[in-house]
Length: 340
Image 1 (tube, rainbow, N blue to C red):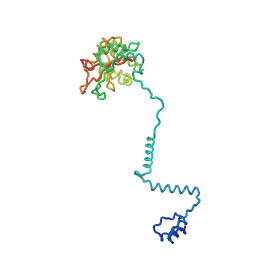
Image 2: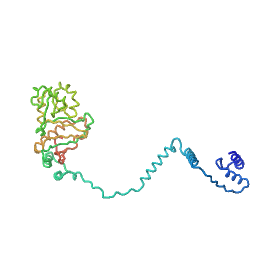
Image 3: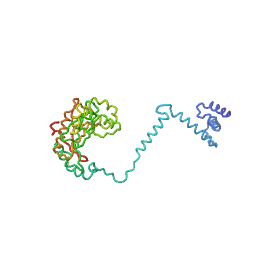
Image 4: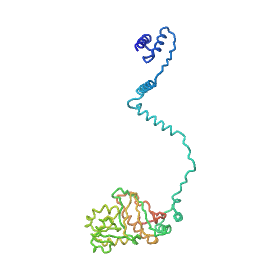
């Protein structure tokens, strides 16, 4: 090392701008000195030295560390993390540009919704013009004729409203007594003394409490008085999810429990707008015939029109359609309904 340092100092005196450093070999420094001394061009001898694998690896690591220190910054666009992310993004873009292989085989055939229906449904659907709207009576006649089921299907009415169900003052909910009933047998329970609701299927305070304690809900409607509502509070988690909790809006909380029971048995039904701003209600059975179904539908639509929210701006009833259980739907012409 001492000899190399002396030779390097001598070289610096001859040429201060020399590109050689102390990392160069003694032979390379001597060749540079000789070239500067006589003014002749002397090729630098290439000295091959045998390096052990460990030395080669150490040298490579040192060069790599030096290169990283010189290339990457601590932060910013030239940081090591930023460079790796840029390389990964470039790789993704390159893969996108690669040609994709064409899918083999024929394209899958997508059938229409009608084609995916049953044979009977398709036959009945041919009788209805989907592009047309019908008068209420004509629509109900079509619905009864196109019922594909063997059993006595329920005729349902579906009304799409222009309300926002999230607003409390636009949450349409009411009850209506259908003149011909809805065709269902209703079991009514009365949470009052038995002598106050003689026409109820189940009556009596202790009898109802015993059923609620066992969570046996063997009834479809529960009627009570305002004074007894406090006793049903602890059973709200049982009655609420089933829609059996008495409510003044539905007429199941009344000071005249006998009258409320008779109305429930006579065909009093509740309707309420759902989250999609649609009301679904069964208005009878196919066996009722078009005339009775028309009367039930008119009573419901009159009640629906009367319960229009005062804060609503715009169209209240946007569309109405009728259908039987598992049957095709028929659209009603809103303009043909005088009560709307």
